[in-house]
Image 1: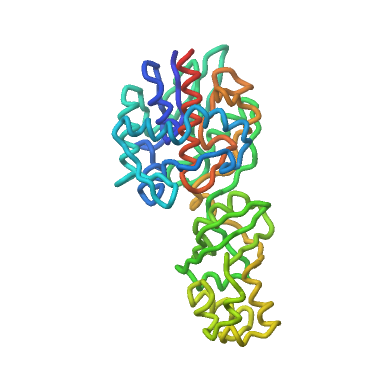
Image 2 (image 1 turned 120 degrees about the vertical axis):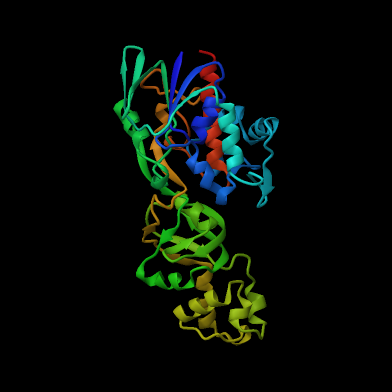
Length: 377
């Protein structure tokens, strides 16, 4: 049985690693595999998360559950440790490579070394005649009994991202759920341009967007706002307003009894507090001297509502939201319900995880589910 895997990222490499004894050809448009692995997590790759459940994904829970059941974070960590890589637990529940992302890439390359890799080749199209697939690249045509599309999404085009996976899916009659940059910063409207002047400052917030709550730090940036809470919020935002609580857990009683200046009392960097006071036309006075009307203005910080202008775009997005409609893919095999022998794994599907290792886990789990089926064929 000849198998072709389109893409050389996390899902493709895991799939190739889990198919020993099978004739597998991996086609990657870059000169080396795992470009996104290398740059992720600040170069240390956030592999997975100790807390794993469908609720951390923007996806149909019934679709992703079968993959997580057979290859969750515990199974993944055991698989890695048996091969000499022991990820480090950081930031509470996130697992990273100890020294560098290259540790994970090297391991995956070693595990898949017996497979054939075609680098610097761009897949142009995939066709099917009778029971055979024909994968046309800019250099050759490869025939296969099965084709796995593990080409990822549109994020990080400079790393080789493309929409070929969606094009292949559409050719075979699949629906593509509208794609958008996700886990990405927001640009701002004119009313929030003062955010740009606060570039580099960070503060803890709670963001409410489309019925979801995202907690963590917000980082003011040259283009608008970023940071973990914002990146997660972008996963659920399409258009319209978001609401930010800049003072989570803050006690107003403490403020009203204090003789300290507001810029010292509020749990934000002083320059951030002063910027908001300027916007609200409030003086930096002691908390005990606040009038009722001034307090009402200040309480806007608990419910600061505005509509982002947009996002930083695919060039800055960690993942792509949307993709191949999972209703048209078998959750137990990852095979297309429209073309026998055609499979989809990883980010190309309409499954997007929150920040914190969830997208890599999905890449590995979906590959494992697909590999289990292919090993039995």
